[in-house]
Structures are given as C-alpha cells and as structure tokens.
Length: 618
Image (tube, rainbow, N blue to C red; front, side, top):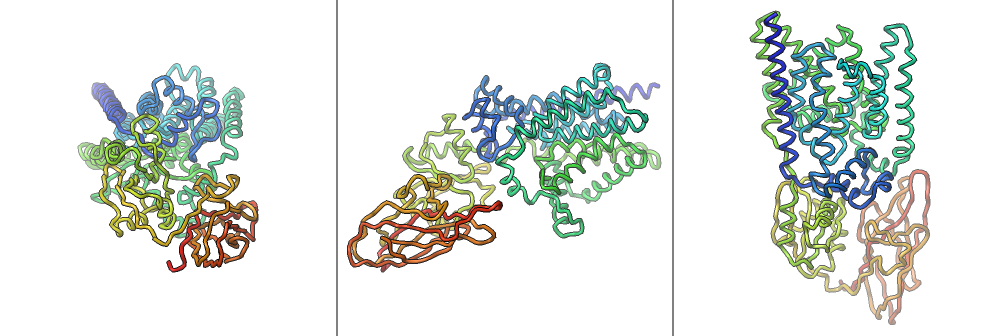
C-alpha cells in the first residue's frame, strides 16, 4: 500500500515536471523572435490582403487551410496586428491547452501510469512538435484536434462521462472546419462505437445524435471548401513523391517506405538517433507494441492509434492525401503511444526475468535516444530572413533593382510591414534556365541584388553557377537559409538592335504570371517597329505546353513574310532565324500556332518571352 502511494506521488511529481518542461520549451520557441519563413508568408499575405468573407474562398499562392483556422487567425491579427507573434498565436495557444491530453489518453488506453508518463515525456520535448506549435500553419492544430477528440471519446473525467455524446457532437462538428484530418479521427471514433455495439449486441440509437451532426458538417465543409479546390491539382504534383505506391512488391514502394521511415523517425519529426544500432531497437519496440495489442486484443487501442495511420496510407495510395511529415503530424501521438507501449513491455520483461534496476535502465536508455537530438537541436531556428533584409536596405540605393527567387512573398510581407524600403523588386521563377534569366535582367546597367534561399537552390542553381563562373557576383551575404548577392550586369551584345517584349502586343494576350505573350488560339501580332534595310538575326525566347506529348508548332512572319517555323519546348529556349530586307520597313511580327487544341488533360499554348533583333554579322 505504501509502495503504491509513493509510486502514484512519484508519477504525479514527474507529470508536473514534464508539463512545466513542455510549456517552457514551447513558450521559448514561440517568444524567441523568429521571423516568418517562405511558407508562412504565403498564408500571411492572404490574411493581410483579404477580409473575412474573401478568406472563405480559395487562397492565393497555392495555399489551402481549414476555414475555421483561417478565420481564427484573422481575428487575432485584426486585434493584435499583422506580426509574427499574432500570426502564430492560435497554434501556440491550442498546443499549450492540449499538451497534457497525451498523458490521459495513453493512461486510459493502456491502464498504465508509467506508459502514459513515457509518452508524455517524449511528446513534451519533441523538437518537431515544439517548432510547429509556433508556426503559422494548421498542422499542430490538427494534432491537437486528434488529442481532444480521442480524449472526449475515452476520457473518464466525470464531466465528460456525463455529457460525452453532447461534447463529441459539438467538438466533432466544429473540428471538421478546424482540421483537414478531423474526419479521419471521427471515423475511427465511430468505429469504436460500432465495436461497442457489437460487444453489447445492441445498437444504441442515442449515438446517432453524434453521427448525424458529424456527417452534416463533413458534407458542408467538403462541398463548400474542398470539392474542386483549384490548388488540388498543383498540390498533387508537388507531393507526387509522397503518395504510397499500390504495388507492394515494387522498387517504388520500397523507396517510399524507406523515405517515409527516415523522414518521420530520424530526419524530420522524431530526430531519433541511429547510433549504437538504435534504429533496429526502434523497430523491435514497435513490433513488441503491436504484438501486445494483438495478443491482448486491445481493439479500442487499435482503432484509435493504429487505424488512423492505416487510413492515411490508404488515402495516400488513392492520391487523396500525401503521406509527408508535416501532413501526418497529427499522427505523432499514435507513434508515441506505440513507442511507450513497446518500451513498457520490454521493461516489464526485464523486471520479471532480470531485475527492476535493469528495467529502469532500459527505459532511460530508450528515452535518451528518443529525445537527445531534440534537446541538442533546441531551439529550432534554421531560417531567419531579417539580417538579409537589413543587408538589402544597407547595400545599394533604394532605386536599385532586387530580383527575388522563392522568398519573394516573404519579402513582400516584410515590405508591407515596413521592414524593407526597396520596392523595386521582381520575382525570379523558381525553375529558370539561363536564357530566361539573362533576358529578365538584360536592361540592368548597374549593379543589382539577387535575393534567394540557400536551402532550395536546385530550381535556379544553374543561374548561380553561371554568375559565379562569369565573375558577375561582387559579394554575397548569407544567414540562416537566405542569401543576397550583389551582381554586376552581364556584358551586352553590341549587335543588339532592339528587343521586343510582351508590351509590344495587345494586352489581351499578355500572360502576367511570367510576363510573356501567350498564343491562346491561332496567332499574335506585334505593334509596328522600324527596321532599316540590312541583314538581321531574330532570336525568339519561347516555351510551350504540350497536349498528349505534342508541343506547339509555330510559324514566324516578319512584315507578312514567312522566315521560319519552330516548336515551343517545355522550358524557355532561344530560337534563331535570319531575315534580310533591301528597304526600310515599318515591320510587325506575327506568330501563328498551327496545332492549337484543348482537351480534358490539357491546353496547348505557346509563350513568347521576348524577341531580340541583332545585326546579321553578330
């Protein structure tokens, strides 16, 4: 009896210590003064630019978030201002309020205080969860929704027990609008209700009062905010690597499995150390936990912990929802509960077969490898843009041009905040070839700035390499994921007579997204320009979109004369043509696309970035 009292008090004391530690770590990460990063800025600009009603519609910059989450964040920033702390307040507050629920859920599912405490400790100090608790994204809110709904479904608190169905009906209906993954958790909870019916051999009609509001909320949310969302197609392309292959014996499936395991357990979420062969021990821990669930026939534990993971894999295989670390953050409690069960079972075995001191040592051994990288890397601050923005402010006159790659929306956000003064900036496409880049900056006659991310350079790496090779980079400032290079203008080709860009064409054919001329149907015609008698080389910078693998086929006319034909490839490429005239012309350029077509799978179009005209000897 005395041992039980001491044990319970020790657990309570440890619970309080872990709770305070988790709160302290999250508060420090939230208050440390980090700037927003690229992904957050996309959402922040939507919240700055639009009112409440407009925010219920599809967002700009290929962004999508639960509508209630968006409206809650908008409410906070309307009160406290469009600053980093206000933008991140909702995820932070919700993560703080739901932090201890992992302990009560694990204890209820397993009946073990020590298992619950192990799970609570891993959860509280996990660096990924700490980081996302203060990021302007919905992922930590989705995790909190999992904790809340499962706690309401199985919690033994007297208030909850007496009102469980009402609380679940209300919370479930609200959470569907707050979390993209709430419907999965509600499905698992519904399965647990069905299991109860089966065990009692009785259908409880009162339970339908829960299911009906859930179903209505799901249908409203789906058809108003998800169905035919314009960002869905692009997101499927962006996350193509994260959809689970259906052929379980294929190399693609093995690659997917290896990438997913490394990403979740070792690189992005748990930061578990692989030293001393612990990666194999981790596998053993999971196998022990699963064996325990199967042998003990813990159906509720399976439905609320294992089934959500399996359902997400199914949705991934159906190409509905990718299996990638940020999007499965809500499943972290499931993995942690399994880890805690496995560790406890191993400790029980060692206590029984060897000695209690060895069992305790095994627990601490596992906890060390589960958490040492989180402690070592804390606080997570690998991106910080403000020093680079200060460098832009201090480097060149405010009239100097700034060309920005992926951080362009981040720059725009801080420009709107008044943090940077240079408003003459242009977006450099993330995937850009050398001809397109040099065409973009060809008008520069003095030094300009190139602002880019050092973490995602593969889209514009060729440009940086070529600038370095040509000795055009004067100096570079780098800090925590961002860099600013001062660049000299490239030497101009002295044979250039004139350059025709999209401004020479009717605005109806302007493609503003990349400042080009779009041949949507059959042809485009430029304004007339003076061309003196002589020999010339026309260099067209063009690209195209294919249908059924066939790219646009075009004809080029100068002053009504056909001077050549060309195919527009996927990326901008220069195409050269010769032209000669024995008299001065007031000429116009006409380009005809011969094979225009539109199908359910695509639209074949040509895009003309510019047409440079050179004297023939060049």
